Length: 474
Ligand code: PLP
Image 1 (cartoon, rainbow, N blue to C red):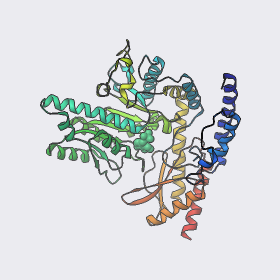
Image 2: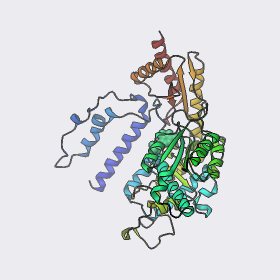
Image 3: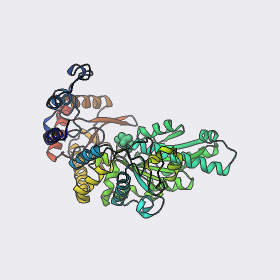
């Protein structure tokens, strides 16, 4: 493809993308295809001679769209949102053109330097303590990881390096393997599955602690677990505090957990994957009270801040634990300016990294903080609107306080009836929800996901829920 053809193809694709998104409301949210639907639609082998781009273009509707779940449909209410905006899409085109692999400063100085500054911009938008910001001149700074799962694992590995270092100073004869076998980390039974996975990948024990009756992990529970493990000769080293749990968007008591972690020298990682975006609004920052006690903090602009996947923002007070833990420095990756700016390859698992800060830069500039705050507030307002509709029908109950853009609700019936309700509801294809279960109570989760969702869409979603309930309860 030559540049002129690229211009034509590119323009046609931009038109297609705008048309797709602006008319997404018309599409069925979840496709009806069966597994294996795609293979018969395309040839068994790659073409020997180039296909025409007109044919490629027309295959999008024929081959791809029938199998797409439309995450940006205003009536997609499953999981947590994944972000989508025109500024981020345009920035990704530029990132694709530059196509650098920014593993070190010299590999593309703009890629590293824009990321450092964007993480400062974003950190200031959340009012993070200055110890997390590179512009404060201390050790701290931010990095863009691919996902929150990677951030949790990277933090765990940093915590592991710090704990091994500390124990070796106290007991110089102890071997690494002996120390690692005694390390123990903590999380809540309500934290995301990626936390348990980080423990498995990091080769350490992680305890899943019981939250209180409102599903929040409390400081006292953590302290009791740490004391018990210390008595048993183990080495507490890492804890994850979730702000906005996946099942029900509840907030662990960071104000209680932070002091416990600091007292026992336990690395505190805060996972605010979804809800963290809301902290750009000052009225929600009470939920991150105690953040100054954390060692690392992470949230996903790619969930709720209009930056397309992947962009998971992570800040560390002392990244040197990662840099030292992951520092393998072959000659071919060395450069003369080493140490003058971050070499982000030491802050993450892979070597390669895309120019992801471009999409953050475009989104922050082209929306401005005011419009991003308006986006968050509108989505929370829509969640409260749905909550009010549920509360107006005594057959239903709300199972968790609605704080962000997630409403957890159920029929006041058995789990089985609620399972049937969800199955029928999703089967109708107008809206899409997923369930969860806490303490054996099954409930439905309705998340406000799309930036296209309006009050009229919520009315439609509620009508669907009510009509399906009528059918089942008849
Ligand atoms: N942490 C929480 C609280 C989440 O809700 C999620 C996903 O929804 C994750 C972590 C995992 O996010 P990622 O897909 O970015 O790894």
